[in-house]
Length: 128
Image 1 (cartoon, rainbow, N blue to C red):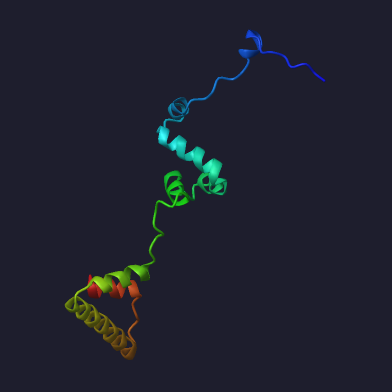
Image 2 (cartoon, rainbow, N blue to C red):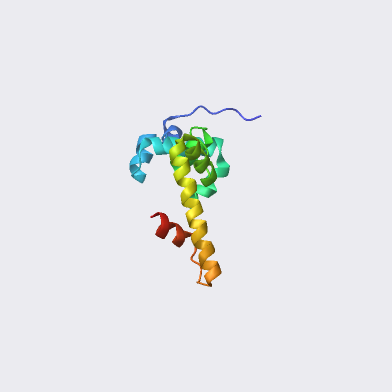
């Protein structure tokens, strides 16, 4: 059995000094909050670190997502549905009329043999 050695002044000075968040933040020219977020993600969600390192995910949004602080991004369909629900009856009728006008123009082009425009061109020229 080995005897436990008491630290003396010589061995104690060989111990690395604890790293302060403030010093790390200054060294990387970022806020202390960024260091706390990175440390939290490393301890709690290490699966996100490769995404952050690859540049596919930014640190703050990854942290917010991991902590459940953000809502999931709405799809275009969800946004349309929300807009439809919040629209007045008059706005809904105007929108439906524009859709029918656009469909009528597309039908005329098809019947006349004109080259058809893309949906984006039709939308911007007709509703722009």
